[in-house]
Structure formats: C-alpha cells, structure tokens
Length: 57
Image (cartoon, rainbow, N blue to C red; front, side):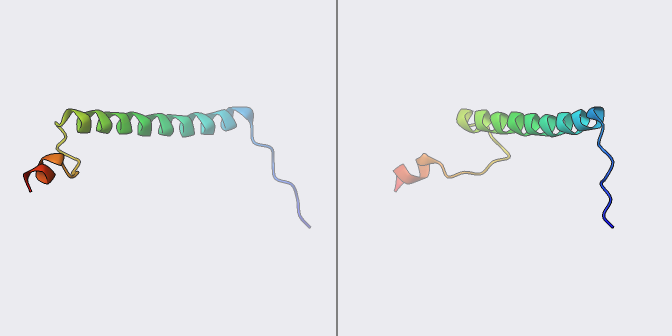
C-alpha cells in the first residue's frame, strides 16, 4: 500500500531555492561578461565572424 512521503521542511526548501537562484545569477553574470567582452572586441575565449572579413571581399 502506498504511504505518503514525509513533508520537506521549510528550511530545506529555502536552501534548495537559494541554490537554484544562485546558479541562475552566476550564469547571468557570465553571459553579461561575455557580451561585454565581445562588444569591446577584446574577447579571446569566444570566436565569432567579424565584419572586417566581409568588407575586404
């Protein structure tokens, strides 16, 4: 016969939620930093086609 599981405590729930939000904030900061470096043209870790190659042809 099926038995209901024990209720998860509020502190455990809040802990999991805080961890999930922290991961999202970290990814957002990384994305913003990558976008800024690409726009500034100083990016060494991201390869993208540049407009200079198209204008030379």
